[in-house]
Amino acid sequence: MQPDGAAMDGRESAGLRNQTTIDRGLAGLGRALAALTGAVQAGRPLPVAGGDPADPAAPAERQLSAALMRVNHVGEICAQALYEGQAAATADPRLAEAFRQAAREEGDHLAWTHERLRELGARPSLLNPLWYGGALLLGLAAGRVGDRLSLGFMAETERQVEAHLAGHLERLPASDLRSRAIVVAMKDDEVRHGQNAVRLGGAELPAPLRAAMRASAKLMTTTAHYV
Image (cartoon, rainbow, N blue to C red; front, top):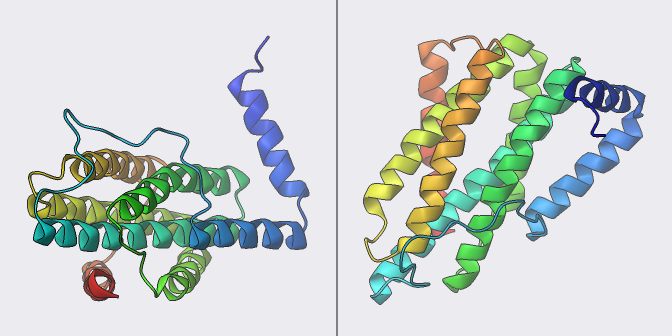
């Protein structure tokens, strides 16, 4: 007989409470290394589309696809670090598990974009350790100001990522069906994660903070396009 969801949630919460600071630190370090070395395994298969050629038709299109997927890969590196920091900062074990569940689903995106870069013969950003470290500190800071604002930060981040992915769908070559299928699947997940954050009690962030988040994201995506 399968255990019910409440019992499983209770055991997961108890397990989180019983972990020592060293346990949590080592587990977090393991997740960071997996993200940065490309060792994260997807729980879902790589999205595909009808026909689904592995490469865009023209060299210039291939180069554009590679640059855009490198940016998306950086975004997923940051998502892993951000949720890691937010999970570590909250005192609520159920909320910590919600952040880590979102990170696991974003881990699919990380594995998908890493595989797509490999198919395109392109490398990830050389600055991934820097992106990870910055996002981890940001997640810790967001978590420290309180759960409602931390969830609001998550919701706003997902809204901005959704808009960013919509822009990539406009820019990706029409011939690159594989990259486009990946971005569509990622975008659907981001919408759901943002809605979940609001449902869990996320507060609306002040307009200046939302603008600062957009400016920071613009700097990161512009840099990652090339480096």
